Length: 286
Ligand SMILES: [Ca+2]
Image 1 (cartoon, rainbow, N blue to C red):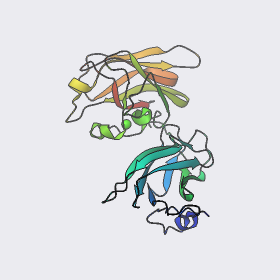
Image 2: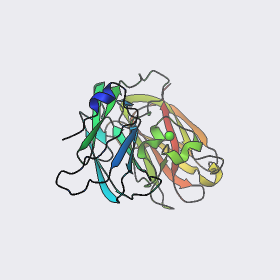
Image 3: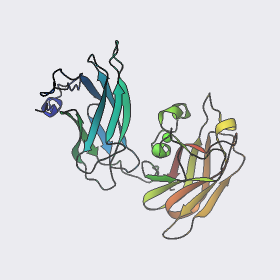
């Protein structure tokens, strides 16, 4: 028997998305209970490749026996997940000790807007998270054409998110919450951070936000030297602007209009000689 919570979620009544494991029919004693919750309970995302939605999964052992639990995730439709399994040891302690894990829900380019879902299952109980894919915001003249577009990098530090530098948040005070890119090769340069634009676009300005917070000022933690490069068609990367000796958190590079289908930040040196750190890179046309 499987408990299905879909109907309750659809009616908006499942405030606590809870799954209680059923006693095993063949066992002489019931299994420990595992309570599962997910935040948010309903996800809205837009169809851009580097603007994932984020869910937080939490499992809590509310029973009296320590146990191990496997939470499986099954994306429906075109959705892609950063993980399809959340496994954890769940000690039976008082007070309860919840264990949480993040999961990114990604929407491939050209996904049609509509309703999809992610199914979660622990033991034999299932929970469905509705996911609504909304159309991406129109890219008008003057809007940032790098926002949410596919990023790639020479490397990414395990504690940071590749897409963090195109997520629309350029506030360095949010640095610890996955809103920036940090390369993964300490004290080794160059590094590069590339953004592929949705369509070939004439651009003439790149705004780069490097780490510059109260705790981590740019003069000791930000990017110092970099080239702004563009690529068009099958051509090579071409440098259109250079920045050297930077100590600021926000640097604007302007250049003659050029058609580009990808933009690269070629990171040559960082203040403090540790990492390349980009909180946000924005690309504009005139
Ligand atoms: Ca960001």
